[in-house]
Length: 204
Image: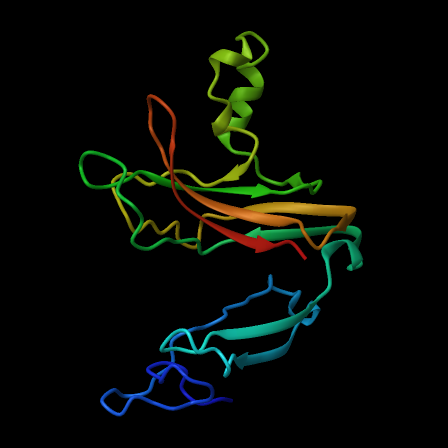
């Protein structure tokens, strides 16, 4: 709680220019990962009232932060299955010459031992043909990770209620820094697939 910090006279304190409407300008934005908010606490958020070299007063802040290495991991006992459904995207980037994309979603899990419940047909096919075809001739970026099928010619894909992806965690630890990356990718029959967007979620 402090007065407007913009359009002030270049002197100590808050003396506003009469011909201009006082307003706020500087901000300090901060955000913690989901589930870790209690480890980030703001201690101070205030203007520098004695700053006189500009027509606005800078903002300063102080925080108490607990580092990842000092946060206890989550222990997963037994087997737990997570099912992802109702997946959709809006206003994706156009990656093809027709002004559309052929998007699919791919889920990357950082440093966590997962058991994939429903491997894609591409994974099964790769496992079979990789025994007879050298690996450098195969499209390795289209295997291993959990992913949906692609939907042709759209920027607003909706995989509906019937498309479900599942993975399991069994007797493992979830460290506070471990993330799930959800990547929207444009499928290309020839050449490399193009990334359309990415979101990150904390595993904990």
